[in-house]
Length: 343
Image (cartoon, rainbow, N blue to C red; front, side, top):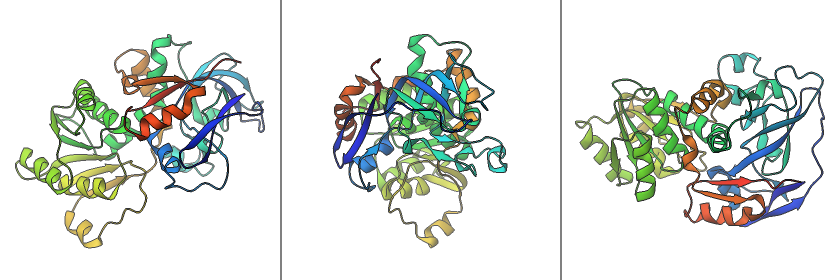
């Protein structure tokens, strides 16, 4: 089968790889209907996250079950399923508390690689959720978004305690930030401030529910948020980038006693203890427990109540994965959907 591999900075390509097989009785094999490029994939692509050799890429996926291990009970061959970027048993104490991404048996799907025609999913019963029947083709982008960016944006909004009567500020206008806007709207936020300098992303933010757009960044961005909130800052702030500037901007934009939800994968972010101490805010985040939200998110998508798939503004065949990476790296695309060619 064809699979995307990263060989080094800015060097990604397609290899012929062995077909996946059942290794454990809890495994399932999927024929992937769609996969995509994540903003976090750009860290190793840019050389910020080192790799030691050719590395399979991809952790977002949806598709048809082709084979199941003998212990799999909740799905069957022919089901259409969506899974989280972390495999989890969904039964341990951490999973039961709603933090499946930190499951005691967690396995990162990126180590398997889902930018491929097929993929093995460990812990299938705890990781995959089936849709009610095979979905219409136009729903597949939205279902794919639920595998990571929608679930991550949703977790960020929940962590920030977005809800009725709240003003929510969203730092980051990538796919996660935009879907954080969608989540805040669905959770009932009264006002949603999207921080973005890009007209096409501003337009999508407004489509998802943003009431205000702030183009300023850094200290100027914090000042603008405070200007819009009677000098107090937002009740809820979503940090969806993971840089030093975005993190400090998010902390500064959160009012005392407010909540900041952070989901941007961060490298070399350093927060002064005294700054955090006097901020007086709640901080919650990390790798999103997407599996916690998947059943509700798939229901909203299949009932056509939300359309997270609009964040995919470029669709390419898997064979053109290198162009997809370039487009996202150069910010010519918000998020790239890849169609695995049939074998």
